[in-house]
Figure 1 (tube, helix red, strand yellow):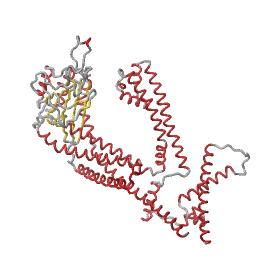
Figure 2 (figure 1 turned 30 degrees about the horizontal axis):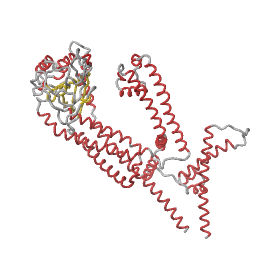
Figure 3 (figure 1 turned 135 degrees about the vertical axis):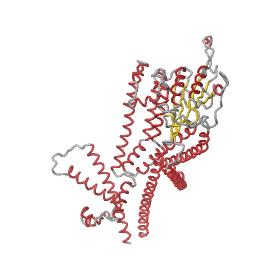
Figure 4 (figure 1 turned 90 degrees about the vertical axis):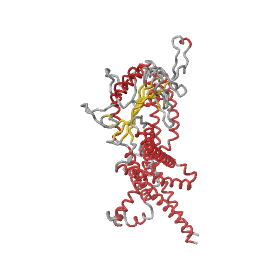
Length: 624
C-alpha cells in the first residue's frame, strides 16, 4: 500500500513536470511561428507603402490648391469665398494645371492623342469631369412675415431635396440630370453626404475649347442658388513610379452662403506585379494565406478542446479578432484586384471620355486601412508571449486587478467631461471653430488636456464664462481626475509588486528559458565549457551541503539562500549584543522586510511540516 502511494506521488510529480515542459515547448514553438508570420506581414505591408505616394500627392496638391488665381495673389482654391472666385479658379489655375502640351520653351512635347502630361511626367487619363448637385426650390418654408421680401427657399442637400429636373439651356448633359451608377460611393462633405450623378459635363482635350466651355457656363449661370456642391474629378498616371493619382476637388455651397472647399488626393498602385520586388511581395501574400489557414485550424482545434472555457481568456478573443481582420484583409485584397482586372482596361481604352478611377481608389483606401489595423493588432498580440516575463506579468496583473476601479473612475470622468463638452458647445459653438459641433467640443477638450488650446478665442467668445470654463476644467479634469487615475494605477502596482516580492511569479519566465536553452545548445556545440562538479561544489559549500541541495529544485535553493541572507542581516541588526538601547524605531522599509521574513518563515515551516509528515509515514510503513 505504501509502495503504491509513493509510486502514485512520484508519477504525478513526473506528469506535472512533463506537462510543464510540454507547455514551455509549445509556447516557444508558437512564439517562433508567430514571429515568422509577423515578419512576413511587415514585409507585405511595407511593400505596399511607397514613399513616392506622398511626393506625388504633394506636387499635385501644390499645383491645384496653392496656385493663386489671376490678379489676386491671396486667393487660391483653399481660400475661395464666392462664386466669382470659383469661376476665376476654373478659368485660371485649374485650366493651366490640367493642360501641359508644350515644353517651357514652347516646343511641342508629344504627338500622342493624350498630349497633356502634368509636370511633364504625369499622364492625364481621359478627360476631367465636372458635376454639380442641386436642391429644389421651396424645400424649406419662409416665415410669413418675410415672404414679401423672399419667396424662394433652398434647404440643405439631402437625397429627398435633390433637384433632378432640367434647367438653363436644357440642351447638353450639363443642363440635364444624370443618374448615379450603382457601385459609385457617396461623398462625405462638411455639410452633407452627396451621391454620385447630377449635372455633368466633361472637358475637352483642347485647352481653348475647355476655356470657351467655362465661359459659356459662367455666362449662362450654370451655378444657381440651388447648387449645393460641385465636384472636379480627374486622374493621372506616373509610369516612372507606377502610381495612379486620383484627384477630387470639392466646392460646397452651404445654405448659409459662401463656399467650403475640400479635396482628396489618392495615390494608389493599381498595377501590382511589374518588377521582381513585386513578385517577391506576391510570394509574401501567399505565405500570409498559408499562415492564416494554419492559425485558423489551430483555433478551431482549441475551441473544440476547451469548449466554453476557451472564451474566458482575453488573449483568445484577441486571436479571434486578428483572424477576422486577416480574413477581411484577404477579402478586400481579392475584391480590389478583381475590380482592377475588370475595369482598368475598359477605363484606359477611350481617351476621349472621363476615366472614373475614383471607386477603384476608394476600395484601395479601405484595403490599406484594414491591413493597417490588422498589423496593429498583430503587434499587440506579442504581449501574449511577453506576459510570461516577470515585469510584463506584473503590468498585466496591475491592469486586471484595478479594472473595476478604472471602470468606476471612467464613469465619473466622462460624466464631468461630457458636461464640460456640452457647456463649451452651447456657449462658444457659434464663435469658436473648435466648439462648432458637439464632436468638435469633445476633441477640443482632449487637446486642452494635452496643452493645445485657444484660450484667446474662448475669452473673446464670452469674457465671463470663457475663463470660468477654462480654469474649472483644468482644475477638475487635469489636476484632480487625472491624478486620481494615476493614483489608482500606482497603488495597485505597489500591491502587485509586493505580492511578487513574497514569492508570487509567473509559472515560467520565457527569458530565462530561452537563455537556458541557448546555453544548452552552446554546450552541445562545445562552444561553452560546462562547469565541473568541483567548481559547483566550491561555489555553494561543502560536499554534504551540495548533496543535500540536489534533492531540491532551483527555486527552493534560491529561497533558502534568500532566507539565510535575511536571517544574517536581521540578527546582526536586532539581536546583536553591541546595541545599547532596548528600544529601536522601525522604519516602513524595515517593517516590510520583517513582514516578508515572517512570511518566508511561515512557508518554510509549512514545508518542513510536510517533510516531517512524509518521514513519519515512511517510518510507520517500515515498522509494519
